[in-house]
Image 1 (cartoon, rainbow, N blue to C red):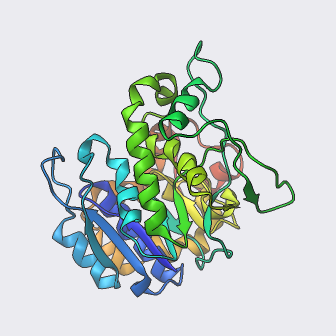
Image 2: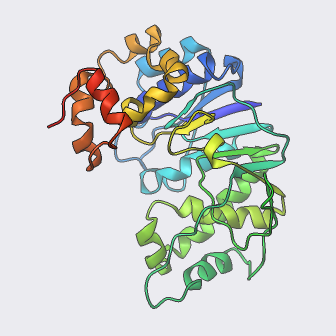
Length: 320
């Protein structure tokens, strides 16, 4: 299985370095099976998008293959299309991951043709538009009516899910190129009716890719293996998490990471990674005691009471 992610100028360079390090050191993925896709510079991007030489050399030093692609229809107008363009350029037996993820154990997936995290609650639409009106518009743009997707759940609660909504943070496909091309077509169609999806996009303004994803799945007719989010695409962290979708770099140094320190530590304390990010002010701030003190203000809430506060105090951190 090949593992793929996006890297481009800016914060994704930091995230790509962390993800690639975790895949090699903790995920036990052969570097030859890791590919970082980066968008080529065109006039559709308002600024620089090509990764810096420093970033490219670090990834290549790990053995990661860098692959250019062109987000030719959208560019900076919809950068989230990057992952779909990259997927359409893949071969087969491929896992596409968000870059703000970290492996906490050997990366493995059950046998599947198409695999994603289990369906989530769909974003609610605006008042007065009816419960499904804007979803009807998106499905109709792709020539689909009211149908039911059969989703193969892992667990005992398997049941058909009507119009499921998925997090696109990780997607596995045996034929990634074909599925990526279909998903790209669905995105293009949904993009043309985006002005009619006001209430839906107000809730998920950057989620045209996630809105078009279940539509592409339904058009493909491919059975989906729904993976437990707690293990494969967890937005929190836990002892049994395999792929942690941390979203923001400060979460890597949050109070509750102590319970996964034996698995996260080899990544964040990797000498090559630390040397590579030694001039990254954001990374260095959050890993410092001062950064952990400021964590409360960054997330806009008090750190959890009890264990996490005691852990912080034992380490010498103070609360404002």
